[in-house]
Image (cartoon, rainbow, N blue to C red; front, side, top):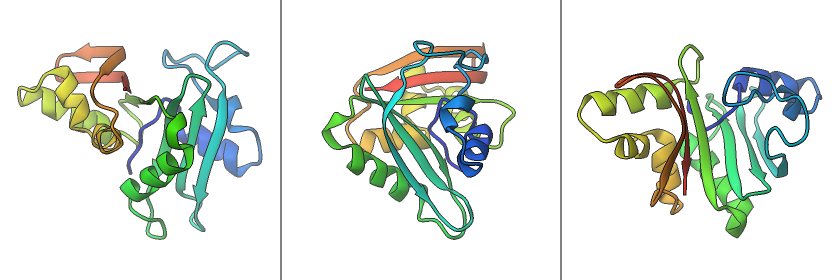
Amino acid sequence: MECGCDLDPDSYWRGFRSGNDPSLFFPSPHGAHIKGPGDFPFPIKTYNEIYPSGRGIIADLDENGIVTMAVEKADDTPRGSEMFGNAMKYFGGDVKGVKAYWQNGDKLRDNLDSFNAAIRSGMSLDDAARATFTGKMAGRHGFTRSVEFVELRGNHGEYTNVGVIFR
């Protein structure tokens, strides 16, 4: 499963499937659920590509031009890179960056595992972030000249929580 997101994808998907507003389920990057306006830049534009399996992509563009997304691959979905590209194409020139939040202990941890493996192999933090699925996809769309870490928890090469914005 692939994800470039700063939200709990299970809650996000449950909220989406139940007909609730998925933004009600956004946790903050620091673990607390959003309490109200101003706690998190609210999405101004959303792209959804959901398949019969209930999997696919949910992507949001916030008021600052930052895209966050949950990409969940299944047998009936296109490749994660194709879904990522479709979302970026939809948002077009409004995109100013790609934000990702990776955490230990969830089933969407591929980016975190790749990041930590790259750190242990000797890469810098920035290059390790660029080496993840999300980093590679952001790079394909011109967003890796700047890598800003908004959260970095854990020991070097064994991080448990990483928040990053590719610009």
